[in-house]
Image (cartoon, rainbow, N blue to C red; front, side):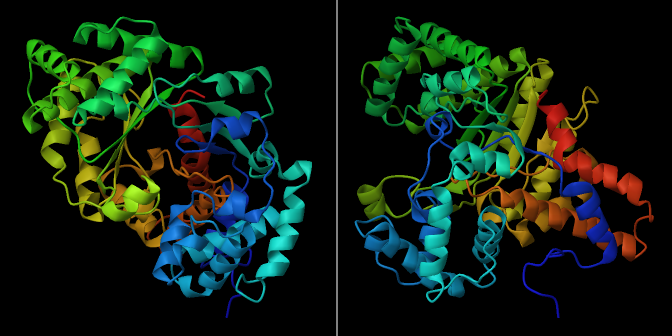
Amino acid sequence: MKNFLDENFLLSNATAQELYHNYAKEMPIIDYHNHLIPEQIANNKQFDNLTQVWLYGDHYKWRAMRTNGVDESYITGNKSDYEKFEKWAETVPYTLRNPLYHWTHLELQRYFGVNEILNGKSAKAIYDECTAKLQTPEYSVQGLLKKMNVETLCTTDDPIDSLEFHQQIAKNPFGVGVRPAFRPDKAMAPEDHVSFNAYVNKLAEVADVDINSFDAYLAAIQKRHDFFHENGCCVSDHGINQIYAEDYTKAEISAIFDKVRSNTALSTAEVIKFKSAMLVEFAIMDHAKGWVQQFHLGALRNNNTRMLSILGPDTGWDSIGDYTQAEALSKFLNKLDTDDQLAKTIIYNLNPADNELFATMIGNFNDGSTPGKVQWGSGWWFLDQKDGMIKQMNALSNMGLISRFVGMLTDSRSFLSYPRHEYFRRILCNLFGEEIENGELPNDVEWTGKVIKDICYYNAKNYFNL
């Protein structure tokens, strides 16, 4: 019987162990999509305790606690930080076979050197030990990033963001590259005309453009796109239910924009046309600058309206949606490709039923101009666990070239999430190791090791021109 979480965790044979320890383990991390807070990085925040760095904002843990019968006051409410941690510790034993169990103990080991199992009995000692370490310079935000061998990370930023903290980091480098990523979801959301108009007014102020027409609106967005590029941005991201690819004319979109600016609600058909137009406009901007565009598709968000009204979005009330993806995604990519304006693209699905769909879609638009130009992204959100990642990598192997895959990202709000890259790497090495041991792949560890290194690091470094 193996020991839990030992050095060969998830590595079932000698070849897998060799691939991980000799090829994958020491590769730097390029985390090209996350939701870390740039201000905390720039100011090198020192967290007061383990709860603040580990539980604040982590809706994965919040959902588990709620399922375990923990009252909301111990999750997002007014209980003390230690009381919240204690409730999480009491929940951990009930997360067996959930990836949270693995992640929790990996994070305790890798960051804090804590090898005990977290539960109600061990909570106080672990909390005190980790909190004490968090008061030392090594455990500042920048220290945590360097401890995990992070080379580059890309945050998620709205076009109207000032990027002041990215500029502050650039003036005071600390050994980890921190780049903004352009996330214009609010700029293509006219379904709530009141919120949209407030956003447009703010954009006009930030871009110093009088937005009195759709052309002026695009000019303002272009100015912000240029500003992001000047500040090191090389990637955009969209978090949408599905791709919108309705036919439209420029005159139609101009009229729709004028209508919403007059504080008039749009019809569903008008909203979809506007979203379709904006996706194309953003894609053209990305292509012109050589950026990578990312599309996270398929989340059904904010299902619990009662709790949404109390806590707001991104607090743990989202799930997998069952949207139709193929035709619109194909039409959108084809339009850009036809006009020779298709940027390097990563598509992510949240519904595992779409795995083979996405795995085959990317092959339609890989044109030989660059290795893996159109990528199917790693298992995302509810799928970034062992089973989800294995299924994604198997489908990609069967229908594409996993050797050109740009690998893992955290998509996280926590500075303690970087062991997810280790988790991915161990699973990846085990897949190759098992097939070598079974005679399904040649026993060429040197070549396979190169492929492993590429997936863990070099493919992303080249793809994002870092």
